[in-house]
Length: 231
Length: 280
Ligand SMILES: Nc1ncnc2c1ncn2[C@@H]1O[C@H](COP(=O)(O)OP(=O)(O)O)[C@@H](O)[C@H]1O
Ligand SMILES: Nc1ncnc2c1ncn2[C@@H]1O[C@H](COP(=O)(O)OP(=O)(O)O)[C@@H](O)[C@H]1O
Ligand SMILES: [Mg+2]
Ligand SMILES: [Mg+2]
Ligand SMILES: [Zn+2]
Image 1 (cartoon, each protein chain N blue to C red):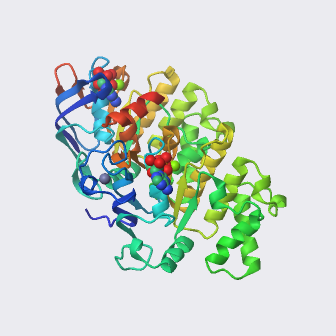
Image 2: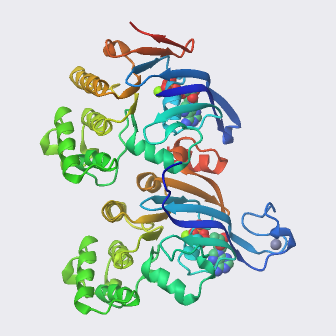
Image 3: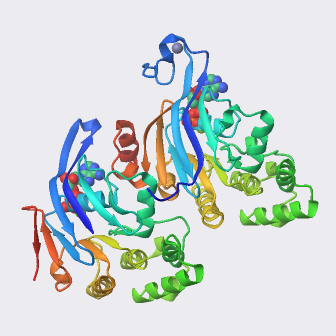
């Protein structure tokens, strides 16, 4: 499904006349329908790997081969902007702790729009969006409100609802549960289990990966750059 | 790639010179004093600008004052003549003609049928002492409309869409606040359902809450009407909210272009880094 081949990413900060290497020679892969966890200390480059897969960062070396449903194998580092935008709308999702806000878009519109982007019909999208909001305990009274008025936990759950509702083929999770309470975390675990059962491939960074015990198929450890299968 | 790319606008190697140029600045890699030729003092307002705008997308153009953003928009709308380069519009004809070379009549037709323009200063887009309704009617007449009932219907529809109270539709924009004037200008630009809308710093100078109204309106229009847009702004927060892809201009040149989160999170050029870090 996805293989990261020997990628290296450095950041050059011009005004400091400084170049830092965030990750070097990373190799990993994940098979269709599996869940790969990435572990490592803070600053070790976990997010850099996910953002490179999503195409936000452009590693200067290596390749990221993704098996696209529409076009077969593509190198994320070489496809054009439009192809990447299309993949993000229809196949690859990304969730972090931060909610991307849109001006004056209600929570229901936000989740619905993410389905419309995939070409779902309006009625169908609306129904699915409502189901997702219910699953994540976003009270109906908030559906027509703007997310910038939500509590931190509500924002996060909305963020996860928006990314998971489209059941992307590949979902990248960058510590989405970092500041959630236990009940909310269980909700997220449940949603991940459901996505996995439906065949979604997942790559996740979790502070407390043991929370994903039983779901995680393999773990990539930043400290020795080794990929291990878990039993 | 299998997917057929549905290009709406395609701009290639477009330049705009104020002045005659000289042998020195005719070289593509000539070093200028910002955008001015040190030899002949010609202003190179745009230098070798190329980009595509696909159907339904919002392209952002960001850059400091004087970087050539408005000049580029004016060339796209035929307010200014390009010194060099080509401009293709796939909705226009099926031919591959460079529309810069067309007759002024053909250009007028493109302005009336394909492009909408919203200027930073409403004075350029509106007749300030005609009523808002007549401003829209004027645009519709230019686009070939002759049916008065249809025109007032369209006027009502778009004034309502931009939240101008219909009991004020016969007021001239000169009596309106800046935010309302900008909304009338947007209604006028939309009234002939152009597939491409050009927006030049349309929220600059407005109060923050009015800015939010105008931004939401733009987002809604794009969502509902599927119009492609070029959004010019010096404000990265606006670019972040609205744009799928972004180009960064400096001294008339495009120094960096890409998907908006690439530009914002992994800026390559020193100038883009300075812009991005200043808002973090
Ligand atoms: N956009 C960026 N610009 C500059 N440096 C960055 C950027 N993103 C990450 N880095 C640097 O790369 C290193 C790895 O960061 P990151 O991937 O966020 O680590 P982790 O997610 O494991 O905490 C850090 O030193 C960080 O400062
Ligand atoms: N009519 C003109 N004559 C000479 N120079 C001009 C004229 N119009 C614009 N310029 C110059 O062209 C450059 C680009 O201007 P402009 O496109 O308005 O930039 P921006 O919109 O990015 O602020 C500036 O240096 C400006 O002074
Ligand atoms: Mg991180
Ligand atoms: Mg300008
Ligand atoms: Zn010169």
